[in-house]
Length: 221
Image (cartoon, rainbow, N blue to C red; front, top):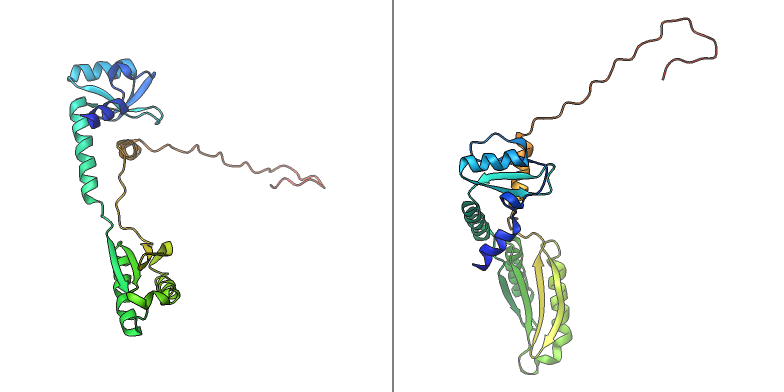
């Protein structure tokens, strides 16, 4: 219910719309500019509401639709966009302070794949027993790892030691996610597509001077 109330407050409806004229849109309705009084009357005759969906347009854009149906469609659209958004997972890669080159290259390959897929990488060095004495070596390893992944990701946090773990986070450079367009943006695109193109004023052809030339004067631009 709270989400419904928030949506209802976002949009002005019918008598709440206080502008001289609006552009109306809707299903099976020709986009046109009408006075606010005529637009309200048209909505009343159709048994629907006049919903302001693009207040910043010139003139503001209003849709002829039942307001309860409009709110339902907005919530449905938001759920669909959320479902399509890619969730960023955190993939862990564990090293020892004395990881050999073969193991390092193997884990580097996996990290490149994770970052290319849009996932975040949590790389850490685990110090077991007396191996904590090699913490500087572990830091060097993580910094080398970050450098080798420079084309695929960027370091979010430098190596930090907590207990027996030295951890570093690397975020993908390219996040695969679809951006949600607001109803106003979608309606602006639709209105722009439906609006007739403005004709540029025709320029008058230059008249060429055909009279006698006077010495010292230049009649060309």
